[in-house]
Length: 522
Image (tube, rainbow, N blue to C red; front, side, top):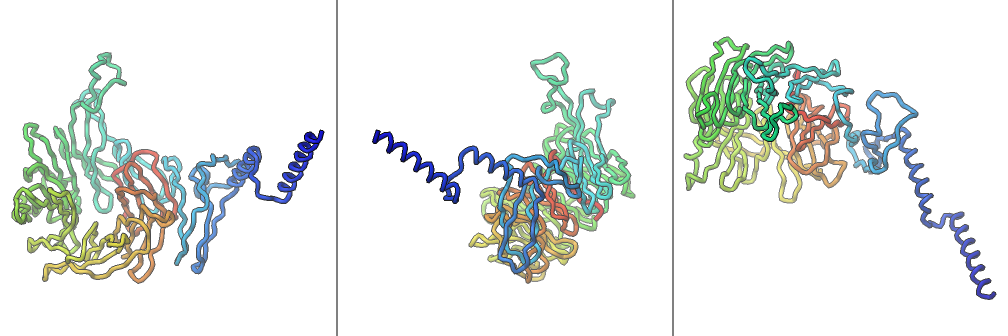
């Protein structure tokens, strides 16, 4: 009796203590049922409109709640009481917003872009999707097909697939030079039934045509047809009057194994459109670059850099790799053209050490045929020409931080020296540095330790802090970016993913594989 009485009393006492703990909130964990109700209430709260606040310039920081793309309404959509609940794992909570010198831009979730509900853009955008050249109209917020290639039944068997394989646009985006690839489908070896599902496009015979496209009227012209092997590059001259392209592993003559570069006039040209073989290259012709006046064109191969006057003779050797090798002629540093300065004299070149596989950059003085290297304490990194023919570059210093620099190319003293420098107070890698039409610098920051610092930035001058315009994926890896002229919108490619950053701060990911982007109407 004594023992039973003690146990009963202890049980009653414990019950009283638990009741008091729950009544006064002693911090005991809730039961599983209580957890479910808490999560349910939390989910219901997420269905309410998300409110964000903009801290003043003197704020020390704040935080906000960010939902994924699926839980946000598109811009301009009406509020609805029927908002669908989202799984908890798709919700990102408490993303910190750093102290800002200007009104901060949010890091929006990636909204999926499938061309059914297009966001507003400031400029038209050309691109290739599923082998078709298309144009995204900013005014109509619609995508139209400009050129969809098809195999001519008089030239090809019935089961031949046609697609746009390469494209190069004029500066204003109104004309395009296109490589069309035709692949004849073959039946699989283990199936002779004629079932089209068993057709193999990978190993079928291939041909290429060169086309010229008017992006406005949608007219197309065939410049060259029936190229038997791979087309490497295609480059439309700035005046739209000529197209240069390269082939390798054979071309119009399949017995030839050398790379070649050709030139053909376009319907914009006053001259006869005659296909001209400019040169056979050692291994492969590559890196075609037109000067802005369309008078000169350069390209490279293993022997060096060649230059050609469009109205003159055949290409001549501008820079000899072998002559500029110090010791062993087999230890060749290959020089390849990148871009012309607007003064028409400087040519940014990429240098590839074939032995160590390292890459750096220098400037080739075309008039003097001399290579100008930066001062020993400078590095060109991934440089870009500015409007005044200075260079801008982003480099990483010994401490891991990044600096933006402008450099002066002095052709008289054959030197490249530092002009201005700016130390970025941002954690992450810089990419895509260019000068926009309003003479501001625009660039991206990725792979940031501070998640909120990954984004697109605009820098007015080296005496002011950069302004963050938009978020970008915080990815560690190769990245490319294509800006519109004023730096307000950009297409960003990270591996197999492509994103669109619009001027209003929204960020979209393309559902389909798209490539060959060009902002138009600039």
